[in-house]
Image (cartoon, rainbow, N blue to C red; front, side, top):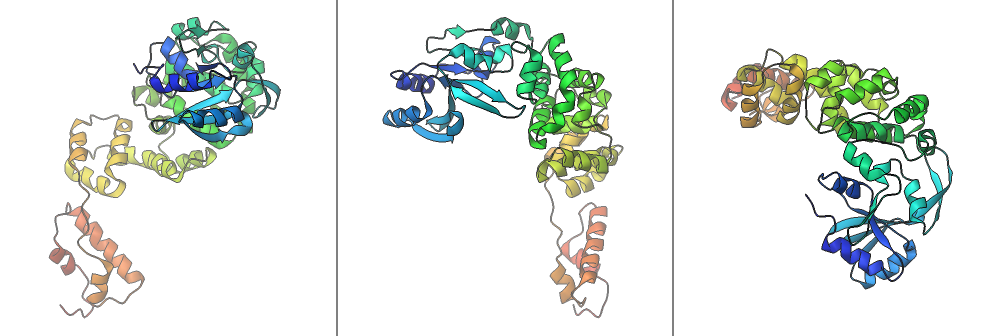
Amino acid sequence: MKQILTPAVLKIIHSLREKGETRIVGGAVRDAAMQRDIGDIDMATTVLPQQMMEILPQRGIKCVPTGLAHGTITAVVDHVGYEITTLRRDIATDGRHATVAFTDDWQADAARRDFTFNALSMDDTGKIYDYFNGTADAQAGRVRFIGDANARITEDVLRILRFFRFNAWFGKDVDVDGLVACRTNANLIPTLSAERVAKETLKLLAAPTNPAPVWETMLQNNIAQYISPHATNIQRLAALAQTGDGLLSLAALLPEDETIAASTASRLKLSNKDTEALTSLAKLPALLRGNLAPIKLRPLLYRFGADICRRALPLTGENTGSAIQTITAWENPTLPLRGEDIIRLGTPAGKQVGDTLKAIENWWIANDFRPTRADCLAQIPDTGKNH
């Protein structure tokens, strides 16, 4: 397991000590308590942001003002960034943004967080500060809101999706109070930006354990419909087992319909790359089924690319062992003919050149990419060409 009190972390904490107390907070402490791999290490401090910007560079630590207005800077040590945020307390919230004031009260700052196990903090001796029984919740796989669940969700509606995301990743039994609050407030999900909803949803669906039971709970409680009303195929998601691929899991939940995939991508404002992948994952299963023999698979590899074909294989429901071998060995061939060859041999520039090139490419693909350049040239229609 990755060490949490690294030399870099200790250097930062000790550098700020003269002006206040700094601790590791949030996910890194939670994961340490659960004996899980530790990802990014974030910190909180009683030191004000401008003071951090002055002190850390004096200690040879680069500072980036990533969110100065909100009290956040990023300290960079050995090319690794560590977010450090001054302790805050909420003055007002509107469901998406909070008005905050800086404080030196660790428990008030912890109370702003969503779940008990995300409110843990650790000092430079390894002592864990636990104001809301978060350690026990973490070890029990219990995702529990701090205080009143409705109030926590009203502060930030995204916490509905985070509740299910954490349950998918390491929850063992869904907290009833939290579930009821999520169901009650689910109609507020459309007030969130599509990008925030997409990011949380894909994280949820990329859970290392199968996310199907959690998504089924979301369907049963009329919550998933606010994310994607078409994402209902629990059986297909469950059959994927553990993929760690959120987009593939989303494709499994959707019908094999390119139009629905495209509308879902638009609803979630996915990137162009993810939109293309999701629509391909909607088309490919039907094309792959019954066509996993090498000679039938290769045209699909040429058209869609090996990576997306590999991702789509689990959606076919077929034995794909031999197909994996074909995909692994695949090197995309290049059509040994260009439009200028067709023009040079007598076809006037224009649409006819493109149509001819496409027709010859289809013939070349149908012949398993074997025809040579000479073979392809011979396929060009005779328009008085001078060989």
